[in-house]
Image 1 (cartoon, rainbow, N blue to C red):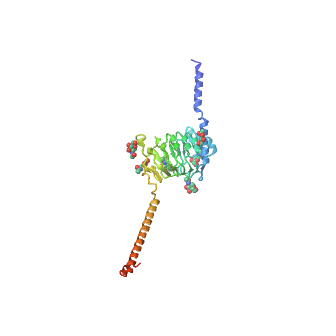
Image 2: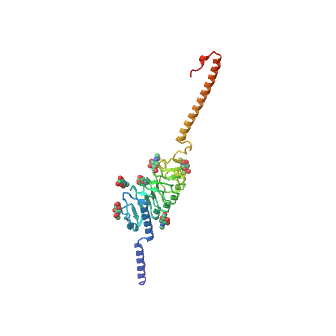
Image 3: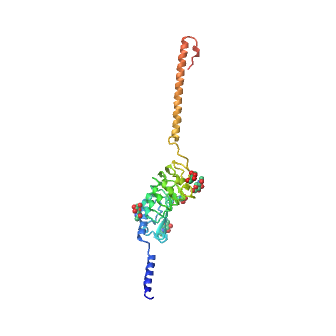
Length: 280
Ligand SMILES: *[C@@H]1O[C@H](CO)[C@@H](O)[C@H](O)[C@H]1NC(C)=O
Ligand SMILES: *[C@@H]1O[C@H](CO)[C@@H](O)[C@H](O)[C@H]1NC(C)=O
Ligand SMILES: *[C@@H]1O[C@H](CO)[C@@H](O)[C@H](O)[C@H]1NC(C)=O
Ligand SMILES: *[C@@H]1O[C@H](CO)[C@@H](O)[C@H](O)[C@H]1NC(C)=O
Ligand SMILES: *[C@@H]1O[C@H](CO)[C@@H](O)[C@H](O)[C@H]1NC(C)=O
Ligand SMILES: *[C@@H]1O[C@H](CO)[C@@H](O)[C@H](O)[C@H]1NC(C)=O
C-alpha cells in the first residue's frame, strides 16, 4: 500500500492548483471589452467615472471586490453594472453584451440617447434591466425576449417608438414591466395586460405600466381611439358644418328676400300695398 501514496498526493496537488487558479482569461477579456467599449460610448461631464481607467478594465474584479464605481463583481466576473443618476450622456454600447455574466444593468436617470441595443439579448443571465429616465429612441428590441431570466424591464420616461413586442409577454419571470411615458404605439400585447393567459398567478401589469404613450391602446388602457376623430378633426368638422349652415341659411334668406321683394314690387305696381315692403 506504499507506492500509490505519492500518486494520490500529486492528484490532490493538481486539483488544489486548479481550484486556486484565476478564472479563465477569456472571460476576463470579455468583461474588459465590455467596460472599455461602454466607457468609450459614454460622456461623463461630472467626472463620475474617474477610476474607470484602462488599467482597471484589464482586471476589474478582485474576487468579489471591484475597483470601478458602479461595478459589482461575483467570483471574478462582473454581475452588476449600476450607473444611475450620474448625468452620463452618449449611448448604451452594444458591447455591454460582452459582460456575459451580467445579472443587473441599471443606467437609469442619465441623458443617454440612441437605441436600446438588441445585442443585450446575449445576456442570458440578465434579471434586471433599468434604462428608465433617459432619451433613448427607436424600438424596444424583441430580442429581449431571449433573456429568459428577466424579472424587471423598466424603460419608462424615454423616447422609444414602435409597438411593444408580443414576445415580451412570454417572459414568465417578469414581475415589473414599465414602458410608460414614451412614444409607443399600437395594441398592448394581450400576454402583458393579462398574464393569466400565460400561467396562473402571474402579476398583471396595470395601466400605470403603459400610460403616457399617446398611440398605445387596448386593455388595460382604453380601446383604440377613432383615427379621424382627433381634437383637431372634431374642431374642423364643427367649424365646417357651422360655416356650411351659415352659408345655407344666408342663401335662404337672400332667396326669400328676392321672392318677397319681387312680390312686393308686383303689388307695388298695382299701387296697393307698397307700405308692406320691408324697409332694408
Ligand atoms: C472608485 O471611485 C469611487 C467613486 O469615486 C470610489 O468610491 C471608489 O473607492 C473608487 N475605487 C477605487 C478602487 O479607487
Ligand atoms: C453634475 O454637475 C452639475 C454642475 O456641476 C450639477 O448641477 C449636477 O447636479 C450634477 N449632476 C449629477 C447627477 O451629479
Ligand atoms: C462583444 O460584443 C460585440 C458587440 O455586441 C459582439 O459583436 C461580439 O461578438 C461580442 N464578443 C463576445 C466574445 O461576446
Ligand atoms: C429604475 O431606476 C429608477 C431610478 O433611477 C428607480 O426610481 C426605479 O425604481 C428603478 N426601477 C425599478 C423597477 O427598480
Ligand atoms: C384574462 O385571461 C383569462 C384567461 O385567458 C380570462 O379568463 C379573463 O377573462 C381575462 N381577463 C381580462 C380582464 O381580460
Ligand atoms: C399598478 O401596479 C403597481 C405595481 O405594479 C402598483 O404599485 C399600483 O398600485 C397599481 N395601480 C393600480 C391603480 O392598481
